[in-house]
Length: 69
Image (cartoon, rainbow, N blue to C red; front, side, top):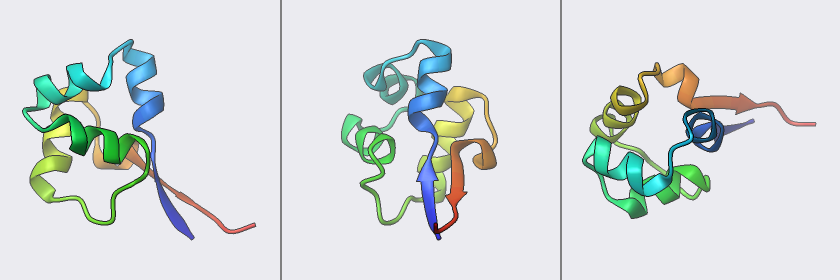
């Protein structure tokens, strides 16, 4: 099983760019890019909270669990 980010979908629904989220959430563009591209190994509670607050979503909306095939 693997946890996947839904950030691309959430940004597309809001017609928001990654840099706009970074500014609104007060986090680095590199961090947003890592979450967007599933290139993260750990994510701090503060970063997750900032993203969720900026997008007005819950943590469960930000991530999904992909089942093995």
